[in-house]
Length: 245
Image 1: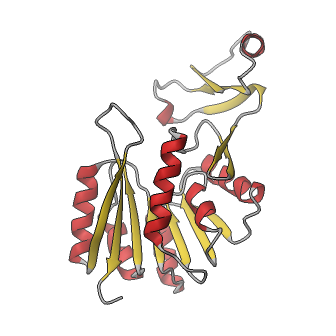
Image 2: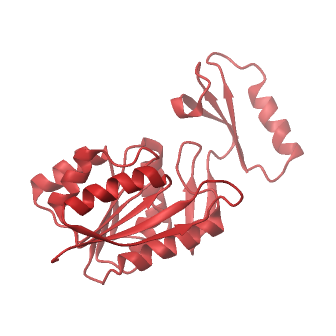
């Protein structure tokens, strides 16, 4: 367990003592951090400091050991995530010479799993903490053919197109808002043989799949994975293949 205490900015007298007492009461707590912000949302960010212990969890998933910080993204249902990633890897159907681009890669779980069997993998993520963790996770798991870049997905794809780099497989795992139309158009220009779209919001997935279909991709399958039992939420993995490719 990693505890993140959200407070207002400024001094917190007794904060370290509080963290020490909390860990003494609950030995399963590996660390206590403080996020100082004058906003009421963790999504708004803030200054993170370590009060006691270490500022990250070590999650074991599909044979990987992943470092996850308070601002990092990783699916919270570990067993469900393992099944989700199995579906992603099955959908990629990649060979040893394949080159994979993963947009919105979080702490690197999909790139590191896929990289076991591929020639090279590039993961792109805009969150600074997640990219730092992804780099450390690559070293932790001995992945020398997997690299990470901190960048906005649209900007990164524009650079890739300008450089002429080729990827025959792409994974996208965007937030609920889905993909920006400009990003879809740039993916169509990149023209990978397969695109695997991981979605947590069916309406935006349907909207984006229609754009890919207009651009010459065929929707081969959409497979739901229930990571949040007894809720209306569902993850979905869509496989798109390029017609004539």
